[in-house]
Amino acid sequence: MYLYSVIDIGSNTIRLVVYRVDGDGITAILNNKYTAGLAAYIGKDGLMAPEGIDRLVEVMGKFRDTVDLLPDCETFPFATASLRNITNREEVIERVREETGFDIRVLSGYEEAMLDYRGAVRSMPGEEGLLVDVGGGSTELVFFRGGRAAAARSVPLGSLSLFNKCVSGIIPTAAELAAMKAEARKALSDALPDSQGYSAQPMCGVGGTARGALALYRGMVGEPPKEGYETQFFAKVLRQAQENPKKLTRRILKIAPERIHTMLPGITLLSAASELYGSRTVVTSPYGVREGYMLSVLESRGVRI
Image 1 (tube, rainbow, N blue to C red):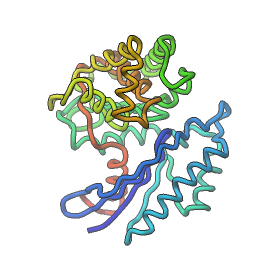
Image 2 (image 1 turned 45 degrees about the vertical axis):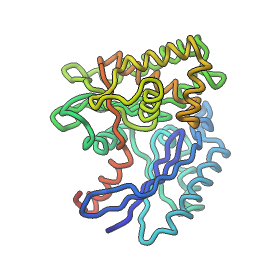
Image 3 (image 1 turned 135 degrees about the horizontal axis):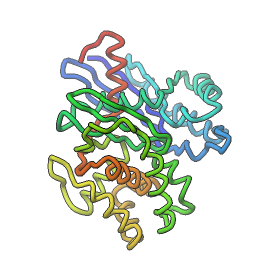
């Protein structure tokens, strides 16, 4: 048995996952998360503010304290849109390296999409469909067919960046909901121009937004069928946000309070993807980029799972 860990530095959350690797494969045995909201510290000039860098260093320091308690546990930190889209990336990476000893690898959008697929593929219900991962600062799309990724793209718009762009308070107004929908459709409409001929049925939801949407479905409707729930649910949530925002806010606070500001922007992006590409049902994978990254690290070291 061996222990490995990954640190996933996202635009909204930073997460440490420790995996046990043995003859049964990889199993997560520790999962710690901090909501850092790094995207909120990025200015119009693309620079991450000192307060954002301090917050990142603080969280990484806490994770350093955790992994130092684990015997012979190698740690592999990576960042997605949180650092991919900033102009002082090297300064941030060097500061983290100096103060915590962690060397962060920044994934390209394409790499993130492909690692999403690699991590989630073992839980997908069929041979074809559309994987969608709405993160805080980007959305990854992968059409898959015959057990392989056929087309992949990363769109530089996620739940937190959409919130920051369109919403002035915590819960969007009717006008802000309309603005979010327009922005989401604009960002996603040309994302995969080569998508004709591929099936988007079912949609495979990956990541925190998809898991949050599933939790909301369970709270509003009940346990979904194994083959997934209808994507029309996304439109239902957005209608309720317009017609009875207080009731929906209470639901979100009960189910996922840390996502009170990003749940609706994330569902707006899921809804736009399902409408644009024709997904009728959505299944939610418990796996994604972290598992894909861990598998790629193990493969590079000659460890077969």
